[in-house]
Structure formats: structure tokens, C-alpha cells
Image (tube, rainbow, N blue to C red; front, side):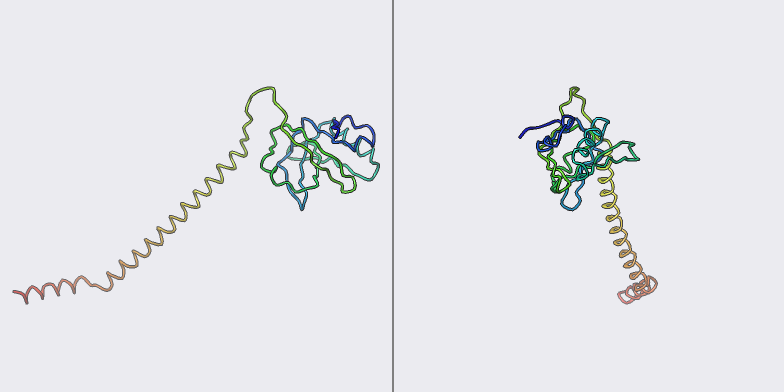
Length: 190
């Protein structure tokens, strides 16, 4: 099947081919809603124009909504895939550029994913996902804190039991009586 760059889509018959979105970034990690996977693809001017051309070719049978994210102040398009693809959720991140090959299903108002790959970088710098590392460390810290709190509570419970036992011993064995009994024993044995 022929692969066509999204900017090269000019007529309705072009939509029968696999459409390639090259060098796109994701706004956030993919999400699954019902049986669909949603990729929020950040839109630059060229991608927005190409998507709107596709919408115009399809007349009113397929609406393409470009959204705006207030937090990042970026435009994005929700690329709704026709299947629930759990494996890609943790494999894709917001730092990489991707080449995504999709085919449009007009009647279902979604896309079929044919391929997705990380675009090759020219520079060899490693991208560090600090927010993800922070979340992992925070999670590990919280697990450790919870474990320590459990141990502290167990120690407090054991300490309370020991105090109760000590109080029982003190209340049940009066030292004055024991001393008197000891003196009595000494007198008898002498």
C-alpha cells in the first residue's frame, strides 16, 4: 500500500492510502477510552492546514477539531485510533518525535494505526524525562514511608503491650508484701 505524506493529500482518492505524519510530538502520553487509543498530536501550522484540507475534502462527513491546551499553550489534534492498544501507552513519551502512519476510517470517524516509530535524531544527546523520574522517586519514597509507618505502628502496639504487662506485674505483685514474705522466710529458716 502506498504511503503518502499528510501534506501531499490533495484529493479524495489520496485518502485511500496510508497517510504519514512525520516529526510529530505528543502533548501527553496516549490514553485509552472505551476501545479506542487516543494520541494527542501537537499541531504546527503545516499539520493544522493539512488536517483542515482533509476535512474540506470529506465535506461534512468527518470533522477535524484542533484543540488548544492551556497548560502548554499548544494546539493539538486527538488522533483517535480504532483499537485499544495498551502496549504503546508506556512506550511513547512527550519528548520524542514520531513518524506515524495511519489510514482514515471515515465511517467510524477514527484512524487505523499502521506504524509508529521514533524519528531519528541527528544529535546524540539523551533526553531525560525529569517529571517521570520525579514521579518514580516520589512513588518509591511514599512506599518506603508507608512501610516505615507500618513498622512504627507495630512497634507502638508492641510497646503498649509491654507497658500493659509491666502494669499488671506491678499491680499484682506488691513489693512490700514480697519483702515481708522474704523476711518471714528468713525468720523461719533461721
